[in-house]
Amino acid sequence: MIMDKLDKLVQRIIDFRDARDWKQFHNPKDLALSLVLESGEVMEHFQWKNREEVKEYIKGHKDDVGEELADVLYWVLLMSHDLDIDILNALDKKLKKNEEKYPVEKAKGNHTKYDKL
Amino acid sequence: MIMDKLDKLVQRIIDFRDARDWKQFHNPKDLALSLVLESGEVMEHFQWKNREEVKEYIKGHKDDVGEELADVLYWVLLMSHDLDIDILNALDKKLKKNEEKYPVEKAKGNHTKYDKL
Amino acid sequence: MIMDKLDKLVQRIIDFRDARDWKQFHNPKDLALSLVLESGEVMEHFQWKNREEVKEYIKGHKDDVGEELADVLYWVLLMSHDLDIDILNALDKKLKKNEEKYPVEKAKGNHTKYDKL
Amino acid sequence: MIMDKLDKLVQRIIDFRDARDWKQFHNPKDLALSLVLESGEVMEHFQWKNREEVKEYIKGHKDDVGEELADVLYWVLLMSHDLDIDILNALDKKLKKNEEKYPVEKAKGNHTKYDKL
Image (cartoon, rainbow over all chains, first blue to last red; front, side, top):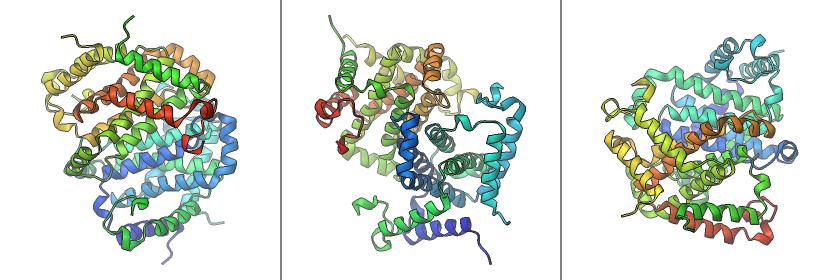
């Protein structure tokens, strides 16, 4: 059987967790807290920096930012697994929804929220 | 050329964005804000509910929670793309790091932060 | 002139900041990031703990949690000062609004969001 | 007895809550979620805006931003009350700590985190 890269990573995340007997801690609310806290760590990299400084910072810290983004992805994948959500399918559906909500002709160059368009 | 499912989704996200000329808004700091805000929306589903209520809630709202998780994944993928980060590779590296930081014998059944083990 | 305790704390926050010449960093967006990140630190204290464990934890860590809450208050006060918002007046108005939005007879014992009542 | 403005607001928050029998929902973890989510709502006002746009936005939306900040303060006060934390005292202690951590001569004009100074 051929597993693609993403499936393999999900499998490793679950194996890692189960080897440590951590499923007992992984209720949805606390998993969602992880998602928020790790997203905060991504954001913290850019705090107090203006746009030029952010750009410059990223050049020297791509691996650090990548590691934080990986932490967010980690919890997205673990949570999707535990809730039996096909996350790629969910993303596919969300993209279709966005395409309807933000028609090109109305949304072009305009970041107003769709419900105010 | 064979693109896998995830690559295709990333491509659609970027095409969607570029058709609307939204790249001008997508500086890293504001992308990170999206990540945090969308993670907050996942979390909000579980607020004020105890563990039983969360369980019950998920049964009836799997698609809603899946949509919020998809939103988080959306920003992880878009941000990784823009910062030229290979996110699956970053996750692979992070998993290796975690495996070293939390050795099974010390971490089993124990959710103490690794630096306190 | 009599200043009350809160006014004096606000004054100390501003004096502390200005002595360090930090106003240059304090644009509203980055201040709001601080608010979110410090709130996250409050939340982190309770992660992975069930209700009994949270209760027990607080007994031994009241000062730590108090310090994180103080950090959140710090940014609320600094931001209100910089945006020239009378925060106690804003809270007074918000309480009135809440009293109308959640009438006792409908809201009693029920945490449904007001717009679903 | 003279109660100051802040004490009166805390009392109204608690009276409002208790009249609706909502204390049953107010465990510390969910209160902390509120803190994070409301802080996110403050932050959302500034998303996708550059510094000039933020400035301009605030002129026209001071009351809206004030209301969100009041929501954050609401949860800080309620949580401090429930955990029996004297929040003004905690802030006073935190300010003293900050004054030691960030001595003027080292911190002036420099937003590096204190532990890197």
